[in-house]
Length: 572
Image 1: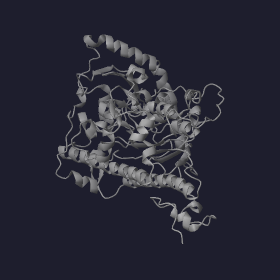
Image 2 (image 1 turned 60 degrees about the vertical axis):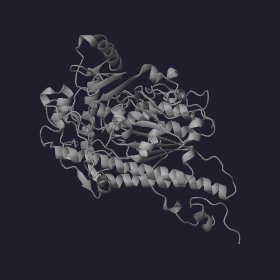
Image 3 (image 1 turned 30 degrees about the vertical axis):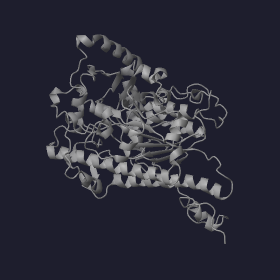
């Protein structure tokens, strides 16, 4: 059984005996063959930092062009403003508390179906390159191949300690402190750069490999046989702190006026309970936040964005060069945002818009967009969540008349965005409900913190006094109207939604505490004696690389690896 099961988590993924249906035929819900899918994920990219969403400073020409030609979800939200819970929720289509994704050291159980499982079952070649922050022995979760290791540890070492936090202690292992802001600057090299270079290189090489298989078939006279479609998840670690801008891209902002936070520092005694607690754990006045430091941190963040934008350009160029672009749906998103100094707050771990909203857009070349019936580029205004990706991908790839939910006995919380992608808001469940949920159950807020957003109204719910913001009239979330008589009816309605979604906060709190205590004990034990790591070790088979004696003509073996393919070789 999984470690999660031993920690008292009630598994919600496969509670009933389930007989898997027979493998489906290769007939998608779209016209023609199944599309290839390239999912590009950045880490901690706030949509407010993109020009499409109004920023005047950032330089991301590749993303900007894609968004102008894409279907853009302008109110997309994470399921949790923290890396692992957000990613596990996104992959499973379930909220973090449904799957025990409490924090950055919570195990992602192997019995939870993911979109990688679903797409692989549908015939896709599923590939992961980059960060996913999987914790536990399973480091694949449905991916057929994983091209890189992760940037962060796969063990229980980062487990929070609510027992100590309840007494006011700060977690010494919590690395997101204002040191990252105080030391922000340009760099020639960094661990993040090393990692993201590897991510992009491995993706480009894999895309070439897919194209070469097709070329080899054509060259051997087999014709353009339909290859398995690919799903490649390219996941970068930037622009996540520490704010270390690559010099080449830092220099692009020389002489550029870096915008400062719209809402300046808010003193601790004027903050809500959660924001005050974040201040105590992250800052507590340890570092003076001078204008120079804030400006350098934001410049570094923008330069990291520009760097990743260049990597996206490289991957798209590879798709073009290998003739794969016209058949590939490109999806771009992030796991959460970054406060970037707004209100004197940095990083994420809060429900303010800069931390919870994420970029999300779908781009297809015109011919593929027509096949997928995506229509013209548009902006979708209603609230959607990253957990909506799984049902959306399922709808795009399942055979007509096939109910993909029969393949996933789990309680999928997400809703398909396919109707919204096609511009059919009337039949779109997301548009009708216009409601998303968000959770935070990690450091700094013992007992957990939860959010409901319906339309323009955001309700924050916990064992403390609630918060209610009307973003239509208060986009910067400066006025809590939870006790305002004019909002009494909507506050009651949102409270009912929250009570229905999280009916037993004390019980949930006990489950989380028990999990934390068990994981801390397990980690302490596993650090003794001979250690066996869960960190993923990428494997490469050298016998299948470059030129090898495989029985094929060596000249042809090399020739079909060239792009573009120029047909049969010259006759003597």
